[in-house]
Image 1 (tube, protein in one colour):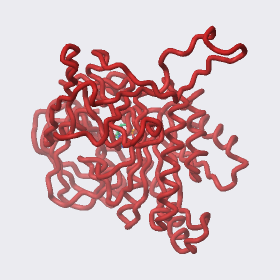
Image 2 (tube, helix red, strand yellow):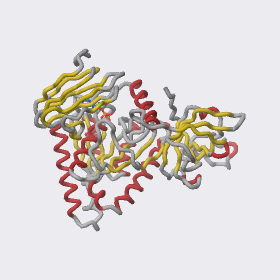
Image 3 (cartoon, rainbow, N blue to C red):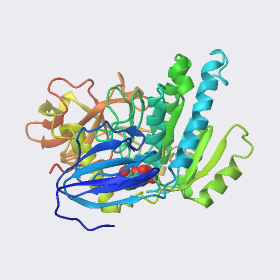
Image 4 (cartoon, helix red, strand yellow):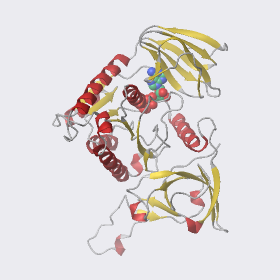
Length: 429
Ligand code: ADP
């Protein structure tokens, strides 16, 4: 890697099938544009000559198939060119998926199997480039006019909405390299924690709920059914993490499993899926450009994602501070809560730990600085099976006056009085 320099504008010439890997500095954005040739960022083509501004800490690569000249303005943390990339193998996967989409589209839409396009699931350890490969496959498909569904099961570093959620959204256009996934109407379920181990059963229940809704949507929409899905997963691949991967493959009926950079995981999956002849397990090389992010960086990224939800990427949104009475809102927690002691149960009964039990939470200062989801549920018993409308952030609890102050994306009434709380916190900075 090159040390940061003090020059401002400079040009970089890229040979065919090479990429410019950039880490934007911690404080100031970087401007970049395509001067000659053609180039793309994670599957999305750059417009010629137009300056794009990348926010601080952004890590990305500008790849060219046929050669390009790039101009940069600003100081980077690192930037270097690489001519060894796995891009050819990635685009070959895309070509196979295209074939399957065309096949699905051409088949009679009454046959549920042959009209189903590829359901791709991307698996691998953390920092193997899963989200990046997912974005490329989606953007390449969208460029060819498909509207594939992106499913993000990564509750730690997801790209659709804030952390602690699993979500799905159709991708109708190549993903904007700066803005990311457009947040029109994503289907979001709130898990409430950034690691699944806090409630593994709830995680599975939510994946199941999400898959049922998607299945229903596909049944009524031949076009999106043929386009298929790309599913991004968590980097936890051992023990329970592995079990959750198998659960996701099974629940979402994935038929293409792309394994990034892990021989062992690949052979384990091949072995366990060998009696499912319609599921292909494909090993792919990890890109040398993938940047490893430590725990602290991940925490920071999560915090920025929450900030972005309320304030926008470029501080372009104005969230609203609202006040409600304790009695206006019902805050639920899923799972946990005190279990009935054995002595209170009939003889022989086990104190069943119900991980999906709804517990009404007393409103007190423990809620301070937590991020809560606003459920679409009409009744409390629908909360677990309902997706969420959005999020609020608790900024003050006044016990004396029984008032809650919270930040919401907009002013006015919340879409529902049912809120879900987990362990997701945020410290506004
Ligand atoms: P994972 O989803 O497996 O945790 P990501 O796809 O999020 O990994 O990649 C980790 C980081 O590396 C991201 O910030 C991503 O933008 C960056 N990255 C991925 N591929 C490249 C590349 N070829 N050049 C530069 N940065 C990259």
